[in-house]
Amino acid sequence: MNNSKRINAAALILATAATLCFPQILNSGENSLTFTNSIFAVLLWGLSFYTLKRSLGSVDIQERRGWRIALLFALLFTAAMLFGVRLDRMENVDFKDIRLWISMPVLTVYFAVLVRSLWDVWDQWLARRAQRPSGEKIRWPLQLREKRTDILSFIFIMLCWIPVFLAVYPGFFVYDAQDEYVQVATRMFSTHHPLVHVLMLGGIICAVHKALGSYNMGIACYVVVQMLCVAGCFAFLLSYLRRKKVSRAVYFAGVFYFALFPVIVMFSLCSAKDALFSAALLLLLICMLQMGLQEEMFFASKIWQALLVISAAGMMLFRNNGLYAFILMFPVLLLWMKHHRIRLCLCVVCAVAGCLLVNAGLKAVLHADDSENQEILTVPIQQLARTYKYTPEVFDEEDTKTLHEILPEEALRMYNARLSDPVKVRFENTAFQKDKSKYAWLWIKIGLRKPLSYLNAWWMTSYGYWYPDAVVNVYQGNSVFTFTYEDSSYFGYEVEQPGARESKIPWLDEIYRRLSLELWKEKVPLLSMLFSMGGMFWLYAFCFVYFLYKRRYQVLLPFFMILAVWLTVILGPTYLPRYVLIFWFGLPLLGAMMVEPLSDSP
Image 1 (cartoon, one colour):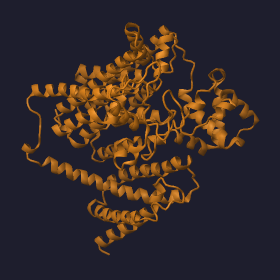
Image 2: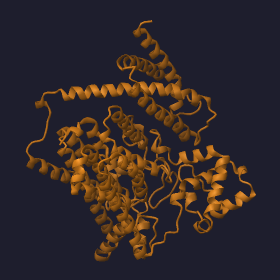
Image 3: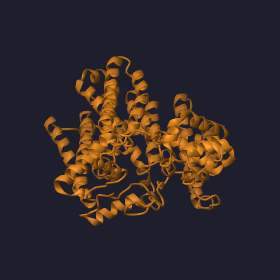
Image 4: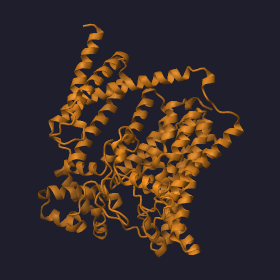
């Protein structure tokens, strides 16, 4: 056979095999005929054959490095889809399912070919864009007008947020907000929440209430302060992109995205610490990108080094996992910055020491209780609870007695596969503190007996971060102050006591209520992926492997930082968008990196 016939044969075989395996990554019932007994399967086969034929005919089969990268990405993506659909449908991955292992290699090769083809398509688009006459590229005018544009962009973002703020007045006071306020109001503090945020949130509310007699006004003041801080970080990013000479189209796409995209707006108006944490992390990503692009200039600038220290310290102060992520990132930075390791170490030490000193000082001054261990033991607690629920026979009499010392029977009965909170809040910290090694050995012993149960327990609280089709319904059935969660727990939406919703624009408030608590956005093809944590994760992963393939190593540092944060949240109590908000905050930066030659900019 000549080369054309071999390509046609390969495309035919792979398209047919992939079409047969597609039901394994579709979230439908075990005996559903939605895909198999449908013209859609035929159309998909035809499209797959055409795409594969074109792809195999255009890509360089001999280019081994690109294929290795594409195959690794495709393998991980395929595994995420195959495992994720089973977790979502049955809360369990059955490793004895032969269909899983047959589908894995077929779909891996299929997706690898598509990835290689997409890289080539993107390269061709960038090449055509670069060849446009200079007059067609809309660039920036005078320097004075540039600076004025940044200020106007900040004002525009704030003005677009204000109607939503009025609609949901006094703002979204949710996600532990009441607990943080109560700590300040009662002067009884704990380290369960970052003390800096507790004091900031509770202090503003208490001060305004004392002055004006209104809790809602206090909540609103805090939300406005947060809006200003977050919008300021967005304006700094836009200014940075402008100085890197991105096109005006890219710049203003970022402006409108920050001003209007619902996820951005919801969390910018939410009292939870996640917005400030993600804003600080965004500044840190900018520092790391600049460090990678222009190392000499970065370490010659005191301003850039100060921003690195401040943003890193701020990130660590606003969420406890920020410290773990930054420590994970340090070895990568040390390997990357070969010529300025002393200055880098100095910056890292200043940031970490500053964070630890502030936290230690606040803990001492406020006499904060630090006896809780649940947050760092979320995964082990969930693993023990799941194993006890489904296979109690692996616990002998002594094991059961030991388990009940830290997790009483009533706690174990509350096991929820997607959320560790019902079991975690009943964890006996006092007993655990007395003999940690005893309970650690119990966890290890049971894990050796039921390793797959442990894996499934962990995946069930984290699969939403890597499975694009996951529905965020972790609080389903939970009653809160003003409603009961039903099909969606995407966003908390409500105003916890002592605040109360006083909407000034009810129709706009209803839109955000539906975005938060209903599934309609997940039912719209393509649009749903813009709201998906798993979808955003794989978008970042795709861009990372593309830069790796193109050897644009100088832009990879921000990806490693995001990965470090992601690795800490998959060990958390559940999957919620607020924990990976940086996916949305960093999207304009990612877009600019993909579209513009930032490495060539001054």
